[in-house]
Length: 299
Image (cartoon, rainbow, N blue to C red; front, side, top):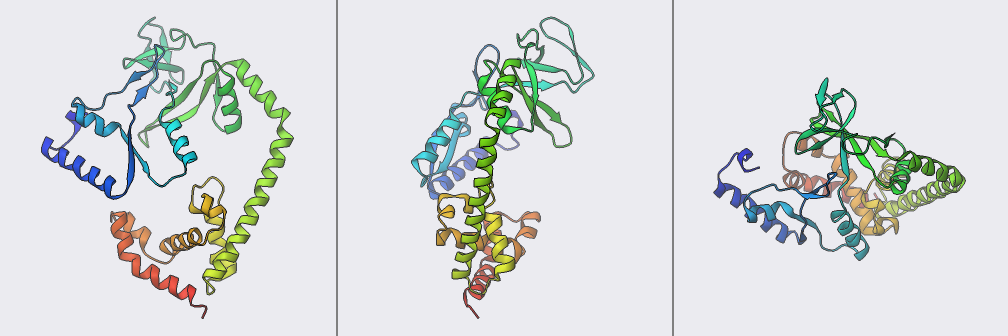
């Protein structure tokens, strides 16, 4: 990657040094985890920089220090997880397999080995079936039951990225996954209903806590909207954290601050204009504090 970096070695090293200083000041824990890529011949390391010290910089991952042991274990498992095989949807009109010279037509699946196209037959995976994205439970179970699987991606030229399309798995795995979903459909429906009830109870409890802390916050509009937004299932917001689910006063206050930041200040416009996030928050700090004081006053 060195040849694509548009600055000299001294400036690059200074950038690395400033970043490391910021991670120390932010109390972030670090771990060196080499990047891996999967291929039909086994996993291989991905090298970003030629210089060893600079390579270590890019291999270093960071996480917040004060996390629960369970969360740290979850992150570690994700970082050390073996990479998935990747299959590409052919976007050109036609290409030739680098091994058998057979044509690979548009919209067909292909592998890339040493940056060369490889047909699924030469990759010994032409017996796999395509399972489109859309049903997360079916996808997860089919992958679990398949002895070989590959992620199918397609180039999105407008966004200049690869979008996930689905999986290649064995036909037996798809059938097994579909059967298991039929077997426990009722159980999953009951679980969904129970989860919805829990979410509604959580939102109601949050509205009460918001009213306790901020008596002047209207319960019918901002309070309910704040609670629903922060407690949205799968959002990763403060309301879904352990403290949020316990309706911790500090977590609720953070949710209210976030609402004020986005709804009652020019924070979004600042970000759109290129203002750094920390600087934007510094500029709106007084406005946020004034809104908080007004809602806390009870007047």
